[in-house]
Amino acid sequence: MRVLVVGSGGREHALVEALAQSPQAEEIFAAPGNPGMAGLAELVDIPADDIIGLRNFARVASIDLTVVGPESPLVGGIAEAFWEAGLKVFGPSRAAARIEGSKVFAKEVMRHAGVPTARSEAFDLERAALDYLRGFPPGGDAYPVVVKVDGLAAGKGVKVAYSYEEAEDAIHAAFSGAFGAAGERVLIEEHMTGKEASVFALTDGRSILPFVPAQDYKRIYDGDEGPNTGGMGAYSPTMWMDSATYATVLEEIITPTVHQLALIGAPFTGLLYAGVMMTLEGPKAVEFNCRFGDPETQALLPRMRTDLLDLLAACAEEDLGGREISWSAEKAVCVVLASEGYPESASEGDEILGLDEVAGMAGVRVYHAATRQENGVFYTAGGRVLNIVGTGSSIMEARARAYAAVEIIDFPGKQYRSDIALEALEMEEL
Ligand code: AMP
Ligand code: GLY
Image 1 (cartoon, rainbow, N blue to C red):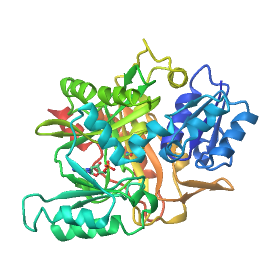
Image 2 (image 1 turned 45 degrees about the vertical axis):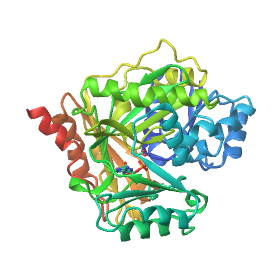
Image 3 (image 1 turned 60 degrees about the vertical axis):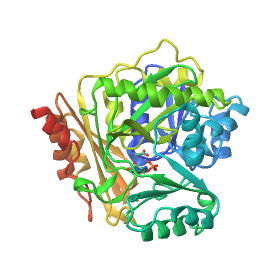
């Protein structure tokens, strides 16, 4: 098979690596890809959002399967564009991708499907949102409340407001126009507390093939301090989630959502990602994404023993029934190296040292994200620069391997969390 992977992050590097291992993979292309994957895939200079450009390339290059990494082309309708041209694509239709593209739509789906989630109200006028907020007077026990813009906002559209004033400011910011069409509607949501996990499932709209859960680390600093980011690290499996809880997540969150989307004529074919929170009342859905998570994918795919290309092609052909995914007993820990200023800004053009040195280390993989290569030298090119993944027979080993490589790789202003998978290490020692 000739395969095109759309996207340029660490997630796409991990996808390319796993797809390249398939005996069915003839040639892999990545658009636009990144220099770290250049040995595995031919890089094609087309941005991930250029749906027509990608479709033309897939036609001319006789691509058998296109695998879409990021949400934005999916929400933009890349699947329909490819289907119209008779091209096979892994990823949901625009209608199904709304589960990520519109938080108001996702809440509607969850309500009809009976999925446990935070109570929320949607508003399309700032005045109406502020009126509603007046029902929660300053100092009352309603706080914190969560204010969210409806549409895609690159992780910046969610604000946890701890006071009336903060909520007022958040509503004002959400409707300010800064979020474009994504901010035309705004949700005010009940705040939940509990541990979060990422649960992925492949689905062709009928059959559901769950992954093992993974743990994401969203905040920039150790101890979950500081602002939210795209994700600063991950590990798999999520040791604290027992199999009964996991079964509940599949039964109460994933399965009804897949069925509800099919029922409303928007069957989901692709990877459904549920962000779930373990509240005192049981697991609840925080959000859905219509794609693989980043960096969770980097901590999951190195453990997958099933042919990923075979699975994704079967999913695109709506033929997942009867399949299974097998996982290695190994553990995987992924640490993200981010550039100075991330997530508010990102420094670029700093030379990255040590990549050659870690290339031969046992149980270490380096997935590139925002890097650039010039005359054999790698430079930083954005916020999340590299993903260092350690694998091993225990979390202790996987973690030690990842952090040994993290220490070697260097660039000015390098930021990383030193507590990725620390909780799992503590559990392992019990
Ligand atoms: P979302 O984009 O909806 O996943 O929100 C991003 C992050 O904000 C989540 O991963 C949570 O950590 C946090 N968050 C979102 N909604 C809530 C909520 N209702 N209660 C508590 N935290 C939330
Ligand atoms: N790691 C969070 C996400 O992919 O949205």
